[in-house]
Amino acid sequence: MAYRRWIWQNLFSEDDCIEEISYEIHPSLNYNRRLIENAMQEIENYSRIEFVPRTRRERCYLKITKGDGCWFEGEGECIPRISLGIGCRNFGTILHELMHAIGFEHEHRRPDRNRYLKIHWNNIESENKSQFQKLRYDEYEWNDFQIDYKSIMMYDSYAFSKNDFVTIEMKNGAEIGVNKRLSYWDKEKLNLL
Image (tube, rainbow, N blue to C red; front, side, top):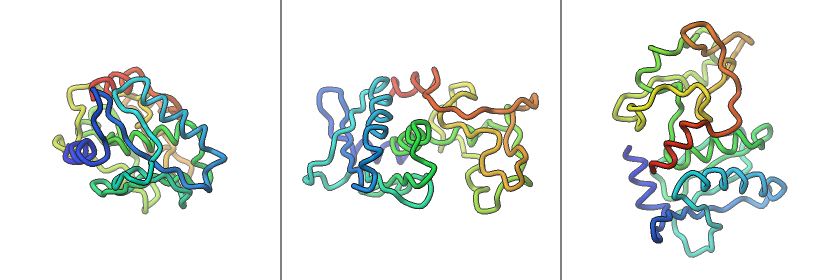
């Protein structure tokens, strides 16, 4: 919640109910620029957010780089970054990282997730166990919504597996697929921003 407030105060510039967020795409990602902009457009279609290229006068902006791996960092910083390394340059992954940048958390980390999901800690790579830690209720904004297995923010059943076994599954044993698009509930949440 605090990060969401920080984003709206520092990255967005208000203009008649449209919230603009300035961004800069590193030249090494020019080949993927259209794909990145398409993912931005998807968020714009369901929210009051508009991504606009940085003009150099914006002090705070979203920086999109070709780093090592797929990640978002810089929560609360003036220049948060998204890394789109090798294997990350697909629509679903880009959309997922952009959702992090505007304040969305992983769906499988929601505070009540143990009612719906089973986490197989022994199958998760040690260095990525933090990606499965449960959030507190005050850290998760969408507590009034039911769990969304189809959310772009939900990991698939084999995410960060160290042994090709399931890391996360529904309580009934069903596996969770790779989500490549915004779900119905993702769109509803974006519409509420």
